[in-house]
Length: 404
Image (cartoon, rainbow, N blue to C red; front, top):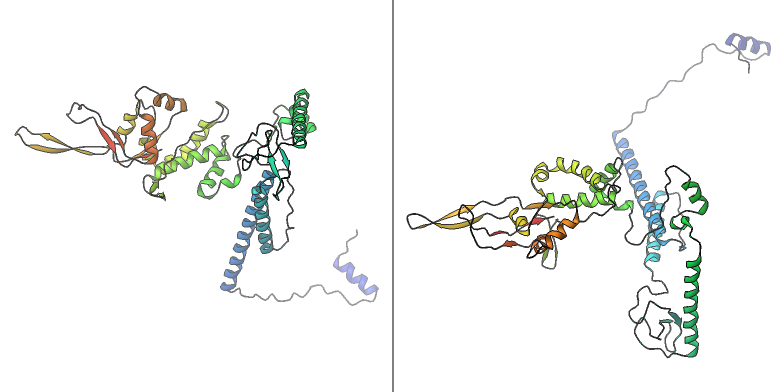
């Protein structure tokens, strides 16, 4: 590409008989339009509202994805998501509700019978006088209501066929060669490629029991655990429960909610289970403790205890101030205050749960009763005979414990 100077362009224009090209272009004056403060405020509100809608859409999409994972291979028809933000929110809410309904919809085969035998084959039959089919066990018992169905030759044949089918499936599964990739949520090719790596990572298949969801981390506590998890190998579930139990202990015996006439306070119990030296239980607790030290230094240094040898020692750490009557030399009586512990918060931490079982399992130990009553927030008492060196009773009690 060839570029021309201004002089060359003017000469070329004269040669072609075109109007002369001016040396300086005329600039139009710039008109500044003052921006009204109200317009700026309305624009900010509009942007903030759009951000809130996008955040709501993101939460709905996360919830829908988790529900689809729980449903597995079950196909559910969902509405297409439009482009408009308001319409997206409405459609996503409807899709979430559809998935929740599909998740709670009972299957045709009952998972837990009320009657009969469920460890053997069961078959579905039609019974005269009933609209819906019923499931019966090997004895012809309706597993839903316990009524007996007449055992006909056709029903017996179906039961025998189901028994033979189960036996054949079991033999086939037993004789099948072991294939390691079937333990993981991977194809055979993905497993073979991954296992060749120096540090292979093979995701497990969905396991029974509670499942972790990132949506559990909500609110202030969720934000804290998300931040900590960025530099800690410990599982966020363990750190979250550890944090919540500790915060409940720090709050103390104040807030509560009623179930009937029973008050439930913020003290909780937890047991954190994981493989030694692998699950990073201690690492996770150290990360949480670094926050708790800042939240309440006095609680961390004075109200966390371990190594109790008896239930009576637990009561002693939260004992109330008492008044005792003593006889004076003049023959009269005087009342003396025996100081107790003002802070009724007590967080018991043991590195091994077995130590708690050993303590509770000692002959004549009342530690299990003390721990249970402490969780319920009931009065703790240790009534014994005898006096201390100062002449005070060895008995102790705490009317309002806050034991975690």
